[in-house]
Image 1 (tube, rainbow, N blue to C red):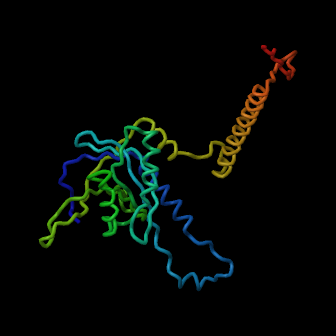
Image 2 (image 1 turned 45 degrees about the vertical axis):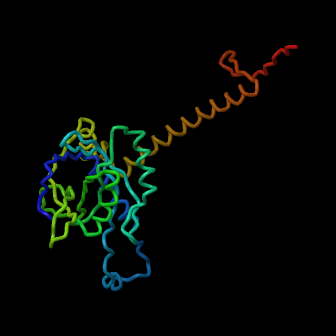
Length: 258
């Protein structure tokens, strides 16, 4: 792997991409951890090695203007570890859906997690070259290093180098900057400083938030049921009228035309 890229591209990475990858990894890791059985003792857990951290995969989308590549968002993908390939049908379906919502965004590359780029990653990288001839690879290192000052995110490009007389594609590291818009800055700041306003626990705040959402959905459901009942009555030739605040239902009879 070469030390740095020579393409001259400028990369701008938005915080939403980092949040999405972190959330994807956290969910997969929590779901892959087996529950602790009550019958297991401390000796068994000490001898069994911990499972390797999972790897997650997805696509990054954004725009490229000249020599500037701006990565705005990402979406998850399904990965088959047996043959180191992505579910292509799932990728195309997600691409079609995102194209309807973000018509100006294109697939710029893909993302994964790990300490460093692996040899099998090049297989995925090459498989995406029919979508983007020069895909970028965003790698998030989930390992916690308190001494590290920089973000644990690396961006790689692929370059063709001649090694031992054989041309080969290798990953080269590229520099990037964090780019944010006003809405992202407000959202990230809100999440970073989120805490209960009344001194209660986070669980209490979450319960109150979910209760409010449940009440709103319940009210919306009741209004939809009223509209649905009204439309069914209209379809059957019935009509509603109100007298002194009371609702009455009346059958409408149409005159026959001979």
